[in-house]
Length: 210
Ligand code: OGA
Ligand code: MN
Image: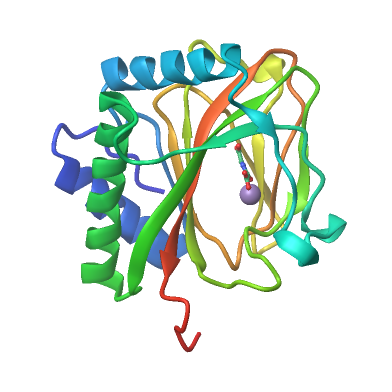
């Protein structure tokens, strides 16, 4: 796994591309400037305090089913134009989208994302980030917003790797986890403290033949 702390976004994006092509996932521990990470965390807390985050469901519409995972987080979807910090985050993710298209020909067309807040004790059981009725999600992206996270706080994102190994990622502020949505079962373990993130998906066209 390549962790690139380079100042150049293009270098960090190239690391993610290499990791995805080779392993199907990538972890970058210093992906975004601490000031922007801090602003995004503040915004998440503000939205939560204003009651804008709502209990998340599983699956979509009539096909929402328990097999897609049981989850205890509260979320709010992001739209462009809501804040400077969110727009900066969306702009970086658009750079990632374009870089992935250029290098891996993934045909990614858009990015959807939401703030997520897991209260202490909340978890998201093992699942895949694909809906039965919608296979547009190709690449999952989770950006973490929690300062000073320690292993003893719990709350890891546990990846179930293809070779049967488990890999735990701590939700430490500034870390970006990227993985191929179709191939990577994962779960969120319960934490002893509140856990904030921005979670999103780079999506293909609806009519893509894969
Ligand atoms: C999800 C998810 C992981 C995380 O929202 O689908 O798996 O670490 N989130 O918050
Ligand atoms: Mn998931």
